[in-house]
Image (cartoon, rainbow, N blue to C red; front, side, top):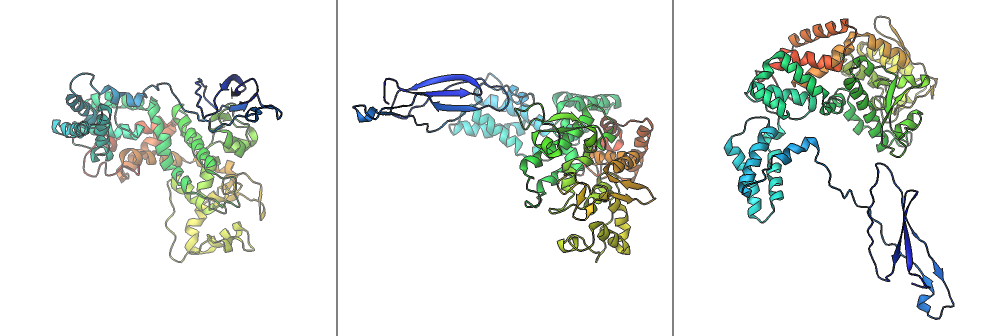
Length: 518
């Protein structure tokens, strides 16, 4: 301290809202301020606002006024958060009256049937309540005891494994909710199941529509689409940092979110499923907008906020999953593109026609020495197709993959590579010529195999097993009928699967044998 004033500290929030604090002690002191902040990014500043120095002041200890700031901490939110809808039922299951032991037993009795998706015996509820009672006996409070009961329920095999029990209605309710929500049935679905009403076809269809309209059906985008389109593999893709220094974790997350948001839009808005291949919009955050060369989203305060944007004519090719950096990256090698990988991915995931495994002794194009040879990569692929052992697969894959060659290994658009102007044309079996991504989209959207493959992938995800020949026959027939109407939505395909005997008959031999990789 020095002069006629105590040291003063100004706290500034964003561009205003000033507060000046008097720091009247020479010892370390703490100051607390509360502010209600809006969503987004804010700036917090701390300044020493009344500096003073008089070297001639008689008392040497009072010649120089200074302020030292040791730390600034932002703690929050301090307000009570509302209990999310998905968790509210757990709180409601706690009785407000009775002894602690009786409340724990009632809590377990209400909790377990929902978490385990089946009727629960009284002895099972008592056994789990005993876990909480042991906590109370050890001196823990009632909240800790409730938490222990919940933990025991969630670590039980009855929760961790989806067991389709012998009660058909409950098993069907579980299958439906895990299909569309990736979670347990809600109270309404369980109530209808216990009453045996899900056996009615129209009631089952109505419940399917209700579940699809619920926000929890977004799990089809985050779970099913991630499985079908192999978006999960993006986490393992590590491009060469010297060649692609801009690829980072933020971009990786943004790329995956873009594709999931496209699927969600097609699902929520009842758009034709072929818009997954070609549409005039996409979703970007600040990171992705810069990557694609699009304007920064309006919500500039939050770089992570995604915004739906209509694509300008020169970037129209980005509409649809094949124009997304996520797909282009996960089908590449760390140092370069891979027309073979991209073509194989299209055959497997979009057309349902995976090529057979390469024969023993088949040549490879994976090593850098081969890639950097005097011949262009297109010429090397042509040589590969001349080998009879390789041609049977590569004649199908290469033209599809080469159509995407104007995108590098992380999805950047390019006109040229080290060999010059990129030729992205190719001829498919049967004589059809594909020229670039736009041409590829037209070929795929016109092929009924795309919609059939999507239906098949949904079937495996929903039923939990591979389709049998009769399942494929029925599914193809139903999809062809939908295609004849001119428009096919995600809801159409889901209802087709839910209508099938393979989905509705639960617990029979061979049924529900797995969880489709979920």
